[in-house]
Length: 530
Image 1 (cartoon, rainbow, N blue to C red):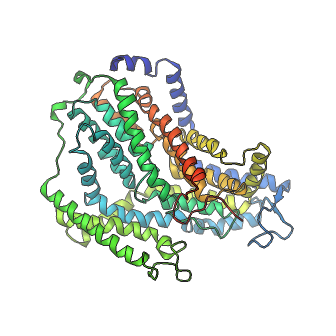
Image 2 (image 1 turned 45 degrees about the vertical axis):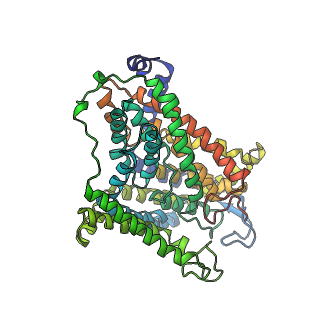
Image 3 (image 1 turned 90 degrees about the vertical axis):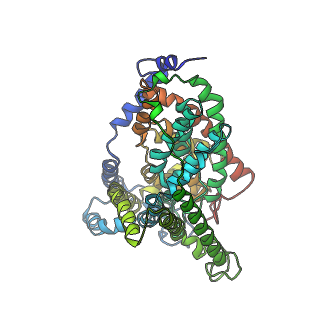
């Protein structure tokens, strides 16, 4: 069996085709500008391209039915140039409204306000520790991966708290700490789009998807909950696959751990057990959550529930689903304050306000990113470039015979590859959705299904790309236990997860959506019918 030192010698960035590949990925990624700059450049590119294509009067047949809202009278869609007086006027007057009207902005901010209460009160941290601290050697791997997936509702907490905790727990059980780090990292980042709960990323992605779908159908609605069913079933798949890869591939390959490789005093590391106040706080939070669920059930389960659709009485299209962001807010904020009040971490409304304001302060970069992303998306829509590219792409796919479910293998693979250099889920989707959502709609697939497929590709390569924002942090944590740990070693350790997740998750997608015919979420369609 290979030792740790042998593994390092084989996979350090100094040699080997795999190391050269990783170095190339890092080099290419470093060539990319900051995502904010990238969106500014994309918006400028759309502006210039609209002028060129508009000059040559590029047009395609309107794919929408004759009675569709916004359909051109002659049945053609032309590229509209912004490189003229009218275009400049539209840009100047729309700069602010593009930003304030960007669908994901408000929903993410509202959802995060609730999550911030649960995070700053200590509820989420205590919950994760309660899941894994007292786990037995037999169940610890499963629980570490599962806790990592659940932590995605507050991703920073998973990276900062759970991944170091996973390494410490494995070491305390006489197992290799890097295996514990890898298992937690696989759950937090590789399983990013699997969860039992809706989080802040769901309204973010659905807002971008809805805006992209309006290029084909201006009335199409995509709610934050549209991938929830698939997320739930994916949670159990990723948990099982993550535990299997850890115990059958990663840990045997790492071999027996040599404490002399550590750069810290391992004896000084202590796994903090929950104190009595934290245990009481968890009980209070659990009770608050149950009461909240009962109250919500009373509004939706009865046939005359006040949050059902006022006309049809159905759940589909109901205020319950349209107001899912408000439910996310309450689901985190109320149990979070209940925990904080009992545990002593929150005493009054001022503590809640401070928690919310602190979380808003951490979103400054996101808000700047949204400003430029909103301009890019608006320019794409104004110029009709998205629709023109979608129609041309749909024609090409049909000509190649790629208009069936098999197209999603290529789509997921493409998203996974792009994610190697553009690690942000929202940034990547803001770039690709305006092209691929309308394109795949034109060959018959619903935006909800397209988004679910995107989320697979976006997740599976998070753990092997140096461009992932927390990659440096993970490497620093790993170096505590292996002072000579290199980037190549970390990525090669995570590569089996990425490969197994890609295959297993893609097969689940096909089995769930196309063989069983199950929707990916409440009220979600599989196929698009104009």
